[in-house]
Image 1 (spheres, rainbow, N blue to C red):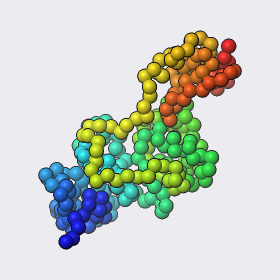
Image 2: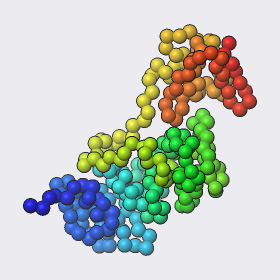
Image 3: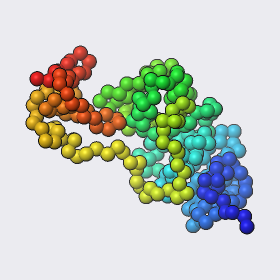
Image 4: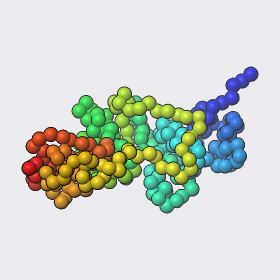
Length: 265
């Protein structure tokens, strides 16, 4: 007996523009005029593509049980969502992915800039110039340097400096950081409920107060322009970073921004 085709294989065949009428217990592929469609067995349209056009594109439903799986497999097939964040903010039903050339050996990402910064920070000491590329004006530019300061990320590329907010969606490539990333997991069923957003780094509520738990405040003076990201007391600093909160302890601690420095009393 022929084994049933799994969801991943079926979606990959859809992304290749195959004309076969394939189906399993959850999904089915079919042709409609000059489009290939991917639907649930209940008839809900998940995606449709014009893959034989000179400029191929795919349109994907933003809220479904298969969104995460479809999004990752579509990125792997070199289709990029250039307007994903705006479409999500506008409450659109679908968003378009356009085919874009990706150099061999690179892995495509479409994530918030905080994840982009985190990957660079973890790997930057061993990265070569072409290991991370940022999409700017539909062209890939090597990332030379990155700096994160109070919720803003400054990216230096061959095209110049680009400023990003940590929640801004960016499209980028990497080739030598794979061993430092969690392996991609393609679930047979997407478990995120409709309307949920991707999980953020958890932060304890007690770390958000102006005073660290169990200590006496007042031993370190924090400049006004740093109070949004630094809390301090009893020779300890709590620094909010894009990687999560960091507590630093010890003597002679300082808080600095540009040339202004305040030392522990």
